[in-house]
Amino acid sequence: MKSKIFFAAAIGVTSLAVQAQPTPGRPSGIDRTLITNANQDHVMGAAALHKLANDYYNWRNENDPVSSSNAGLHTWDDRLADFSPAKIAERAQHVRALLDKVRAMKIDTWPKDEQIDAILFRSQLENVDFQNRVLKFERTNPQTYIGECVSAIFSLLKKEYDTPRKRALSATARLKAMPPMLKQGLTNLRNPVKLYAKLAIDSARSIDPLLKDSLMALDVDLAPNEHEELIKARDAALSAAHSYADDLEKRMPKMVEFVPMGEASYNYYLKRVLLLPLDAREVEMIGRVENARYRALEALLPDPKLADPDPKRAANIPPDQASFLKAYESRETEMINFLKEHNLISLPNYLGPFQIRQLPEAFKPTSPGGFMNPPGVYDKDSTGFYFIPTYNPQSKNFYIRAAIEDPRPILGHEGIPGHFLQLSIANHLTDEIRRQHQDGVFVEGWALYGEEMLMRTGLYPNNSPAQGQILRLSRYRGARIGVDVNLHTGKWTFEQAVKYFMDAGGLDREAAEGEAAGAASNPHQKISYIIGKWQIMNLLGRYKDRQGDNFRLGQFHDDLIKNGSLPVSVIEWLLLDDDSSIKKATVEIRK
Image (cartoon, rainbow, N blue to C red; front, side, top):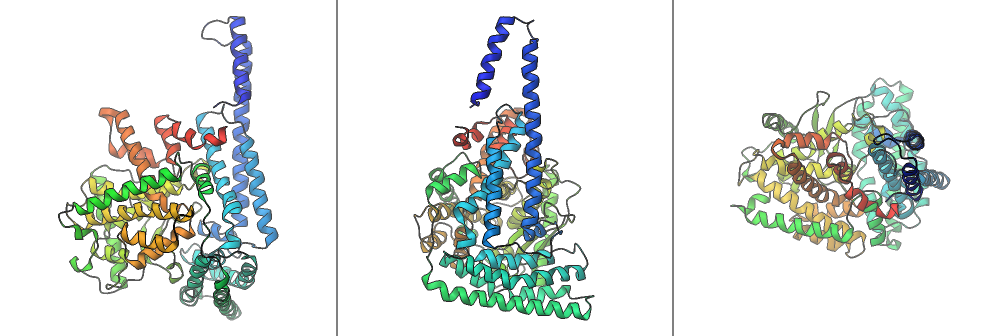
């Protein structure tokens, strides 16, 4: 809907143009003046928007130094975030003021690309503002503080971006800052949630290997006094982390079990942040439909047991962790060759290596299946990692069993053509607002879509363990939606969520508890996979119909991911020139 100002201006132009009766096809002098003014307005507005965005990114990077390190920007490697109440309030006020400025921009007359940038930047600010207003994790979630400690060190270790000595000195500075930060965290936690506290306790008591073993790889070329300072700071940080866990444990009896955000807030996030043209009920319905479909497809396999990974069916079982990681990583080459032979996607020449590594203990409570660590948006090193749980051939963990039997489905999701490829391309966008955008629904939807796309195009034979995995992985991703929506709208308890993962998702209890914990700790993230895949599949069909005889699947994939990690509602506007989905998502904003 056009703004009132633009609508009135449009009426004025029409009436004056009729009176003057200009030469057909040529605008009158008044028309030209108005058009020129409109062009100047949108050019000035777009320039102001991008300046606001660039200033914000610089401010954010300095105020969140650990996230900056994770993203490959190492300017503030010797700092942690300031969690004093005054600083928390100051940051929240800064974001809110900036959001108000962006909301006030009249963008309806801007060209499409500039409107898109404005919508995207507004959603980025809405995301931070939502955390500040609704979730308030500094007050409710003890994982906020121990997570800062874990990531602070992990971000210095994962890549050799500088000499071990310089990284060790940065680690020493961060370690020194941990005890007062954790103490401040305990003061800030006015309304801690018991579930979050339990996860934080598990992480705090699992931090020892990260600080005692992994960190010590940097203890080279240090002067004797620097070495002593590192050890002293490390031991103090460990003691503070353990004390933090002990204090939380003492406070747990008085903590609330779990506090849902409610349906109104849940829907607000869907529309304002994720730019989804769906509400919670529609999202939950898609999850139930997809879960039922993949559950039935498992049953239609000639051998339905193939959907439940079993290492006993594997030709070779790796004897140890090193062999396991090597075997896992080696399958990537055949997948790349398959993609090239079938022209399924273009691989840019800047693509770096993709490696498999062991998951640090401190991340296990909320990431039982491991996680992807792509090149950061500021990273000069193009390497990406996938962190997997500790190898154990007797493990009940779904991801370990699946990786032993056939790692390719998970590799396709995490590596190429999945996260590693897609995010590497996103990092190379020239439009900074789009380069910074990290829409999880698209990111996870693309990776999940890639799993099934590889199966449908012939990488895996029928009635194979890989085919069974694909169906089970989609089945439990469908179950994730029911858990996420019903947990955060207050309809289910945590135990109901665990049981649903086991029943509808087909997961073992260990994996189900980790999945439910992840859903509770990270609202909306678990809907990303199936909802994103569903949107991409819908777009694929429409794209194919539009292309007709010129349709080529590989071209669709290239056109899709060249835009970065943007919401599919925006990509529809870019690829099909159809803004109906983004209008539906932002209808309340436009009123």
